Length: 427
Image 1 (cartoon, rainbow, N blue to C red):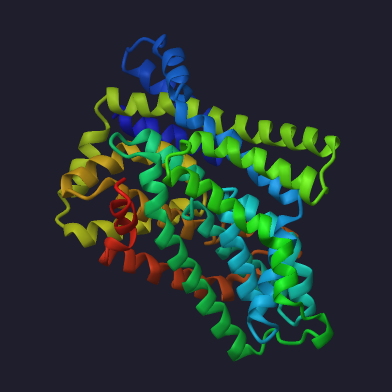
Image 2 (image 1 turned 90 degrees about the vertical axis):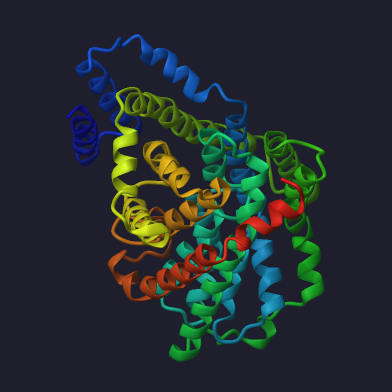
């Protein structure tokens, strides 16, 4: 009964427009009070929820995304990718996806990448004959790869919450699935462009030379190599890698491109501080919600009920896929993990699933939800930049979501796509 009250109150508060962190904390506090437990457990759980070393990486990676956005890295990557791909039908759409995948190896945030890439490519794609709803759909879907391609804030949260999963291992496990999703999106946007005659209208004199644009984009392309390579050779931990990425971005902005000023630095620090505070407040208050579900014995009956449905491994995975895609339409990945992982991990343990692989496919499902209307966070950002309504993107988003579902099915059917790399490098 108390469990039903807990989730019902949370749903009502969320529907009423209460911030998700506050809704989680209030619902958890009410459940604790109804169960005659001491409310003095709340401060301890709030502190314990964020007093974890890996979480230091979150404000750093948020700051990294802001730094690389302002330095002009995204613009230079677009120019290089355009020179590399060419200017035929579907070329600029492919460029948008490729650039979003590279930016994903820097920022780790889907909405942030959707904003950065959308601001750079929207005007040029529109001039090249792409409809704005198609542009918004492509950018949003491409940005969804950013919670898969490391570094990923969602992966950090998952590793912190799930015992036995390390941040480096799940970072490496997300690499190939993220690339697979990106390739599926590229194949789809190219096919649509060829069938509908999108793109290919750029004038010959606007086409760029590969070597010149590569030199401009070199420093940006080097960033993921430094971040991931440094972790691989043991030079620094994921948390230290985030700090190194910040200093590298500032070095590029001040010494190489010289596009940053002290005023920019101040604004970036304020922006990163505000966004990080929002994330960590949600994490802290969600710990009260999670503590109440485990202490009051709500988790195990729900997990046992799902396992007892008799759907088998693949049937249960399909059910979870449906659940997470639907929930992902309304909530971000971090919030979904904080709310649902206490229930999902026992289900995974019941079937004997590898928790690193399980984390990757959960994140893929959430990524699909981020571009699925009505409340897709990535799509909301890209639509605002493109100046179109979300409803106008539905004909294009459907095809892109279908491509992402195919990639998800492949990772479910062949777990080695996710697990080969971390096992090969001994993680």
